[in-house]
Image (cartoon, rainbow, N blue to C red; front, side, top):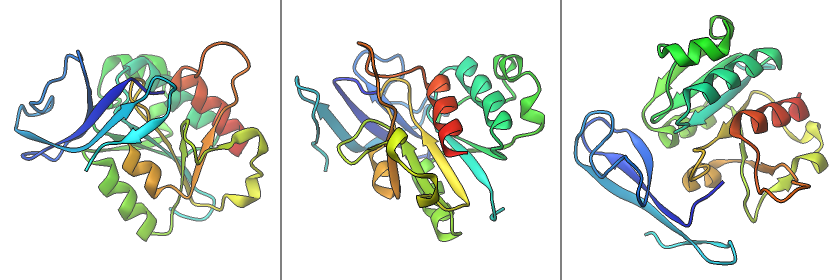
Amino acid sequence: MSTSSFEIRVCQSCGLRYPLTEGHPFGIRCPHCLGETRVVLKKVRSEVGEVKEVKREMGEAKAVLLDNIRSAWNVGSILRSADGFGFTHAYLCGITPTPEVNAVRKTALGAEEFVTWSHHKNSVQLVKSLKLEGWKVAALEEDARAVSISQFPNPQISNPLVLILGSEVTGVDPELLDLAEHILYIPMRGQKRSFNVANAFSIAAYALT
């Protein structure tokens, strides 16, 4: 999922990393602590849809990383599906609401008690650390490098694996895509270009398990 253009900002006070689009209620002040932020990456989408950069527990473990997911309902739904598909941990990053929010718990229906979770302000720093620990990284996103999940044999992905899903508006952070060993997309048969992020996770989780 993407919008026409967006920028990634990082708070110079608390370190929160979040996307900002034109007209979004979030501003250049950090939505977490209202501190000063700086632009670390800017993207522009052309009319034909091509994205151009303007910037400057291991074993069989599977985890999901939700980066700047805005909807508490989506987060709760993903946690419930994560439990069903055997994902053991959820990394909740940026502005992603945690199970401390009532709407997340209401939608998760208790799954937050079985899928452990942790909150991280900067997903890029987190993923770099996970890779050093031996985790393999897959991202679900439309991208020129992406491979159809229907054509991607599971044995190519070794565990432990973390699956990244990004903002409902701006998609997966471009720097996270650069860190991922695998970028996957779900083929669309209709007129819409993407599924709801919670539905997309369920499709991908099923395919990968």
